Structures are given as C-alpha cells and as structure tokens.
Image (cartoon, rainbow, N blue to C red; front, side, top):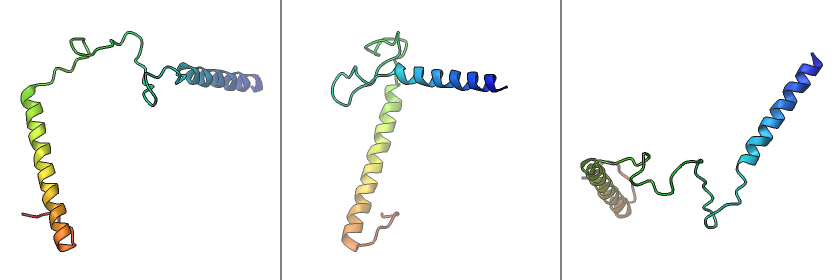
Length: 91
C-alpha cells in the first residue's frame, strides 16, 4: 500500500513538473507579449479556419449600442459633477 501511494505521488509530481516545463516564457515577441500559439495555429487568422468572419451588420449594431452606452454614461457623469449626487436614470 505504501509503495502504491509513493508511486502515485511520484507520478503526480512528474506530471506537474512536465506542465511547468511546457511554457518557459522565454520566447516573447516583445516585453510583456509572451503569448505562444498551439502547434499548427496559423500566424495570420484572417482567411484561415480560425477566422470568425463577423457579420458587418451585427458589428454595426454592437458599435451603435456601445456608442449609446458611452453617451448615457457621459450624461450621468456630467449630472454627478453638477449636482454632486450620482443618479443612474438621467434624462
């Protein structure tokens, strides 16, 4: 029983050390940019099977929604600066 437990612990330690060695952080493209793609992942995503091919109509909807959010937040901040009290619903 003791031998089985020792073998299991040794196997776990070996597995953990191999995972640590898988990424060494030494192949950075620039300081702070150390992301490495999995083997077989293309350098350029556009045109590959990983290209998400976003629908321009849906992207435009998202941009319009974000713009509206920014406008509402600007009104809220302006009102808070004026009154000294933050109100969520400012019209």
